[in-house]
Amino acid sequence: MLTEDGKHLYVSDDEYHRLIEKLAIKVYRSGWQFDTILCLARGGMRPGDILSRILDKPLAIMSTSSYRAEAGTVQGFLDIAHYITTPNGEIAGRVLLVDDLADTGHTLNAVVQMLKSKYPRITELRTAVLWTKALSTFQTDYSVEFLASNPWIHQPFEYYDRLDPEALIAKGTL
Image 1: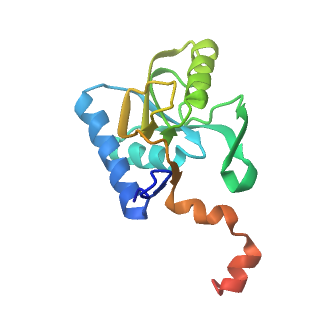
Image 2 (image 1 turned 180 degrees about the horizontal axis):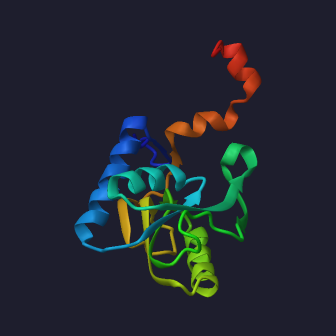
Image 3 (image 1 turned 90 degrees about the vertical axis):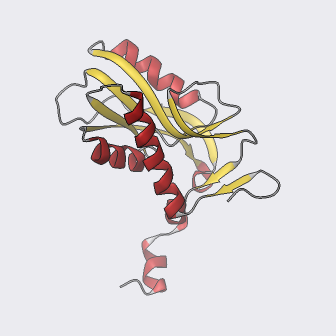
């Protein structure tokens, strides 16, 4: 649900999963044949996992981080992992790079440039996200929603960013 002022987008679990399913259909209908899904952790892990299951492709993981301060609401220095975890040895062939969104485009651009320079066995690389903001400088190959007002996206699992084990115990989870 987008707030009236257009500054916040609140996404339910159901809507989040529908967006991932729509992304899977877009990729499938494109007819592009690829070998591996590479998701960017943390935001791309859930979409990457589900796409891997629906499209029946192996899932590789690369860790990136830029939103760490203020429970993940303030963008800082971009860290990109030096290694990719993949079930197939070194990542190669045609790769679908998955993240949750193209916000500024900085992360996707940096990762794509790094993959092209350090992984010459990748023969083709395409990108897929749930959301693309208008301010993004990166053009993805597949995206479900374009967000013209550049809202802050409140994803359903962000509840856990502010929760610790003591709070779970106090909540009576056990």
